[in-house]
Length: 265
Image (cartoon, rainbow, N blue to C red; front, top):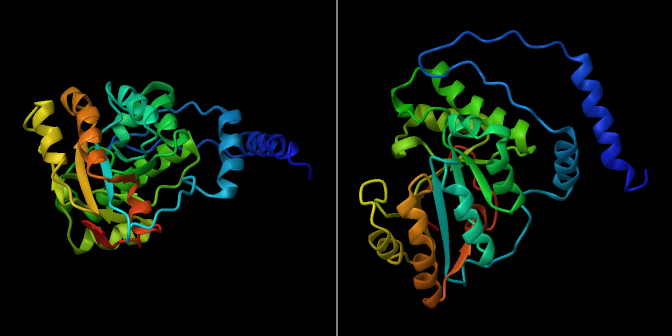
């Protein structure tokens, strides 16, 4: 098949599947996870994404973080109203990060434009549950829904199957580890906490991030204006120290193992 014909073939396939598969019955609402909101998917965008995924995702960048001073910036709880501005900042400096998204926030972003841009800009995207509960306090079924609902909406919007997750509040146990293993998700924690959710002062957030060591995973939240305001100073401080900014998977040189917990390299 000619290369230019492949996206057209994929579009035809998507159309056939859409017409032939009957609509699923609406799931009943639960206190933890509401019924899935309708998501409009552009078949052209999906076809292009499927083609690009043949070469792998995220786009491969090779770093030897055993020798380089690497640090992974991670942003939780979005996408929010400040995420697009953050993506602009990172794009200007060609910095890649890892975004742990909340399913409800993805659903609230009409059209999924922000989550699509996260993927299109080459950032790594991870599962941060559907409604941000402490996963350790849920039944097995509720735990499964929290992860699967977010997985499904992100995959429908972007074509990406997430491989990393972060349990809200860092709350995990053997049951959470077992479920993430079944879902094919590695548990990504952190070793630098900027406490940006508590202290909404950009200079304080930037100073705490600047204390990172080689191999650090830095915890941030892109839902806070003060955190996004701190990013330029944060990048300048770490850049002067010779750090290379990488995604979580790039930090380890591979996709982390499902179910396993990671705090730093």
